[in-house]
Length: 365
Ligand SMILES: Nc1ncnc2c1ncn2[C@@H]1O[C@H](COP(=O)(O)OP(=O)(O)OP(=O)(O)O)[C@@H](O)[C@H]1O
Ligand SMILES: [Mg+2]
Image (tube, rainbow, N blue to C red; front, side, top):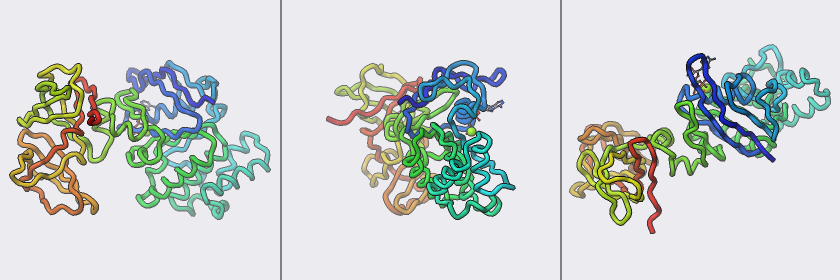
């Protein structure tokens, strides 16, 4: 019925506050990704939930029960670390059984849980191997298997895929997606990889500066970032931010003059934003294209070209100094040093007030 509930959780190390009033509600079978820069408190929050770290104030509830006073082993939570700490002298089977033997789970039950986990992770043929005889990806699966056999109500995974190479990573990503369909538990995964968060998670929790900045579906976080930080942090390449000033609302929509002089008619509601207010205009690469000569686009100099095959990202700099990334279909021929014109899809622009508050484009009528 009820999943995980964090209420006003705060934590300091000495004089340094690392979490400040974090509240979050997670449904029983939800897949959540924690995304945020290094040092934003993601691991600390995971460790508090698991009981490996104490909290200074606040409450943690799981399945309707308050758990922040319970020992880690009594919480019904399994945690998988970035460095899959397997016991090297034990076989895969023994590694998975270890925690259950300690918890005095009957032998038959242990065997059947291991068989089931091995089946989910497709490591049935590896059970008698030692970790040293396995690849990184296989070891990480054993670490996840060790979590599965505990039959937790909640899985906590701290960057579980970051030690894997790119190919293994995308395979294990698919396995994680399958895992969540086969276990009756919620799952929180910390990741630095946006693609991982976007593709796996039901909802993403963006953390920064000791706080949760936004909780939302991948689509919400991408299309309606709560503030300038989220807007910049989510999306790759990052959203460009151009300084400007509000001219005036035209037919209820904001018109902005950029520092370089160009005027943009946005689709952002002008209500509540004063004329002449300093703002930043946020543009994702897919909303900036190269314009043909003489088309009246904004002049820019190409600095870097990233050809991905199906599209090309063109990193440019405007005369006033801002960086804007444009996107072109296919294999673009432009080169660093080229002078280009940028066409901006102003109707897709986001606008940010000086305090970082986000204003999103409205759908056109
Ligand atoms: N045991 C500790 N003692 C003192 N400070 C700590 C301790 N653990 C973490 N911190 C500090 O708390 C802050 C948050 O750390 P945390 O490990 O939660 O960040 P993170 O978001 O997981 O970062 P990363 O993405 O690098 O793993 C950091 O500033 C870190 O230096
Ligand atoms: Mg961490």
